[in-house]
Image (cartoon, rainbow, N blue to C red):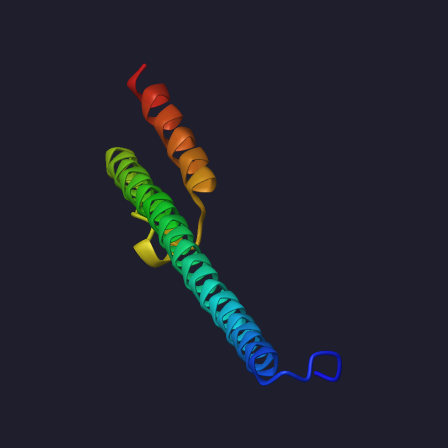
Length: 116
C-alpha cells in the first residue's frame, strides 16, 4: 500500500485480498464437505460389509443347525431299532456336529452288526 498510494490501486489490492480470503474459505468448505462425503461413504461401506458377514454367519449357523437336526434324527432312529432308550434332545444339544456324527456312525455300525 505504501508503494502504490493511488486510490485505485489500493482498492484493487483490498479487492484481491478479499477474493483471496473468499477462495481460502471456499477451499476449507470444500475440504470439509469432501471429508464428510468420504466419512459417510466409508460408513456405508462398513455397514454393507457387516451385513454381508452377518448373512454368511447366519447361513453357516442355519446349515449347521439343519445338519445337527438330521443327525439327531438318525441317532434316535438307530436307538429305536436297537431298542435302547432315546437320548434326550437336551443332552444331544450339548454336542457339536462332529461329535453327533460320530455317535450316529457308531449306532449305525451297531444296527448293521445286528442285521448280519
